[in-house]
Length: 116
Length: 114
Image (cartoon, rainbow over all chains, first blue to last red; front, top):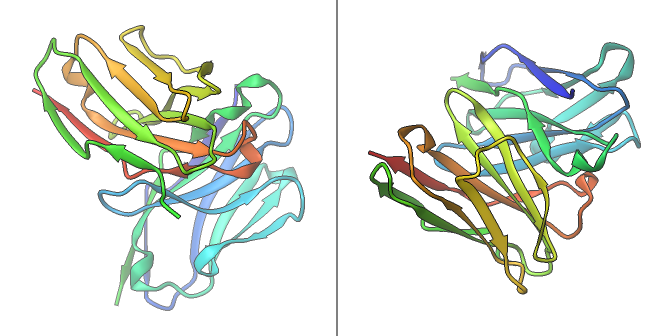
């Protein structure tokens, strides 16, 4: 069965520092992978997605993620954190192997805190 | 362009009651999915509708049901509410049944069962 593991439920960085949020997946075939962000009392906003084109994916607000098949990872990075990046981040996978691929399987989430 | 609209935003219900939540997808989006978000279980897939038919269902009891109308608007219903049903219910829409497109989520309905 598909699964997603986000390492670290809470990550703290200083403003201007590198952001690295980790995501590993398990899948029998290369899946579609997504990163979503959720601000308090709001829904999920798509940051970026991997759909088997380029392995380095660029998203909104200078976020990017690299798909590494050998490591089954899809880590999210941002070169310089901003206070407004403080939020909860979710990695998700959809299963391309069967009809259930329309459902997203989410990781438990990582809360990013940014200090000045 | 209007986003995904969910109503109401907040709801308080008593155990044993039933509740109906509404979702209006982005214009032109025909696929609507529902997710439950709780602190303990995280985000879990409830079901997906496309062209007024349920196409996919998550592992939830039969108390959770939904439907989709010809204009793609969707409702989900929870009967015989339990305390554990307290959650943020999120609706997501997409143009077609293709996950590579990504989904657009609404702001959710916060349901509290007392």
